[in-house]
Length: 376
Ligand code: SF4
Image 1 (spheres, rainbow, N blue to C red):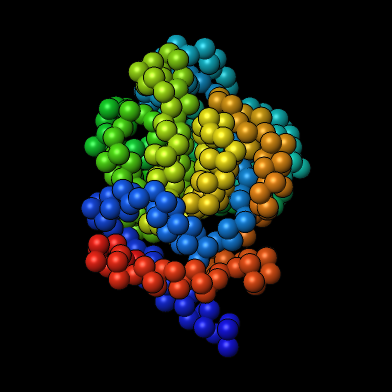
Image 2: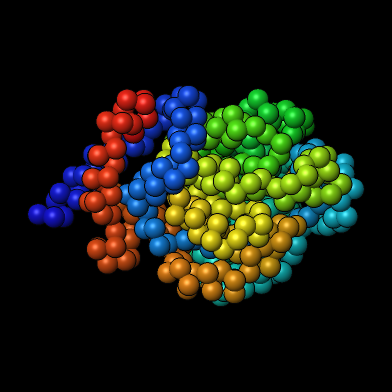
């Protein structure tokens, strides 16, 4: 009986909550809610779709660092800026695999690799090596994600055939603010690459960076672009800029994004994209442990853990292990929330899963939300 009611509530709230027709105004209203209500509402949605005690640990390795021809104005790896980052060639397959083995042994369940270049064109041998790495990482039963710049349909298909789980291609910010950040590729080119990824059957990982000097309306615009994609990205990384001296943005931005703004973005993304894994990405070291936990409560359910995050500092496995232990979090396993599963594949006992009182809380708040045009 209880199971049937739970299923019914879950079914109705699920079908009502997944939307791809958000207006900016609606997202703006959510973003600007009193913060405590925003966090509560995001936490409620989070518990409907995810196990709130599970957080996925990912490790991101720079497999080809520096020397990039693009002009992303925040990036330490652009050859246009003097940041002290030395350009290197693609790491050897065996060296990458050594890092993947370490990441798995330490507890990461997703291994992500980034290369600093515009696209794969003219890199036939390099691409072959990357496909080999993808095969080997998948053989470790880890999720594998790469970010290799712009991609055409054929390259996307090759990556899919090699077993790639997800491809990262961030939108970075709103369409309006984007030209102030990057001039060497357009927003539409980014969306085109994301289309190619989706068409190839690879999961989309796409998010943005806060603290680029953007306004709140740009954060809302970013979430609007992501939440109105034909299907929500499987993964949305939200980064807090780590200002790099020598880059135009790093020299302009005097202080990192405030935690309350960061929290608002996490919570709004959770509400607008209920099933997505929201990744608390770069810049986590700027926030206190309690702030991090607040972000997890508001719907972030993945972190990057390791020695480094590309070229910036990272929270270490030991630090996360202590945090997880202290606050009662567990690691999300690889493929635990796999596509096609009717419900998330929770491993916690049923009493810790979806709770009818969460649905009741949403139900009670519904008239008020409807009056504000915010009902899901
Ligand atoms: S494309 Fe990537 S590596 Fe190149 S400058 Fe932009 S963010 Fe940096």
